[in-house]
Length: 271
Image (cartoon, one colour):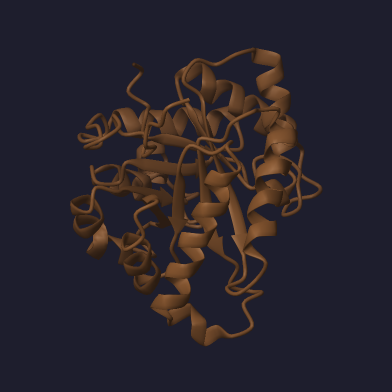
């Protein structure tokens, strides 16, 4: 064990894709190689962001990685065609990543395309979304677990009432700390918590700081909370990977495992 089981490599903008079409991809490819070599074993990706190609390129180059896990996002508007969206996310990811099995599908309500915004605070609608999405994911026979991406307290409460949902994911950083009020409830319910974007997509990095510990202080804040079982962070260069890992190793609680799965935030399932 390397002690880095809590870290998850985020891929939304680490290379050229839909969000950053003109980006130089080489530093990002090198970053993923560096992270894997250091012991990071979880990768989070979204098939619609156009960056899974880079994950596959690196994995094809380095060969089989023992213990590697994939979290894949599936987005859909509330009351949208959830079955088609989930199946498409699974099929696209399997093909683009070159894998036969996805460790966890992360179900997310597409806020921009949900026409009836009042549904976003509707517990019944949210529960149906998570329940049916999980049913579709498991019916594929290619998914090990289903997580609920939550935009606020209402969706957390809905997710915790659905048995197939084994973990909750949410943006979690010093500028969006609302999930901290629900960490005990999530833990008591036997679910994991995935903290997304601890540096708020880089907005919380202090470019004037003279040391990595100062630049990434918001990451250290997240690491001190052991109930955050998995921390998904995009790292777009080897230097950033080294800074993140150094911050992680210097965090006093960074080595504490989660209550169920040694801190991966992933529920083990039979192959």
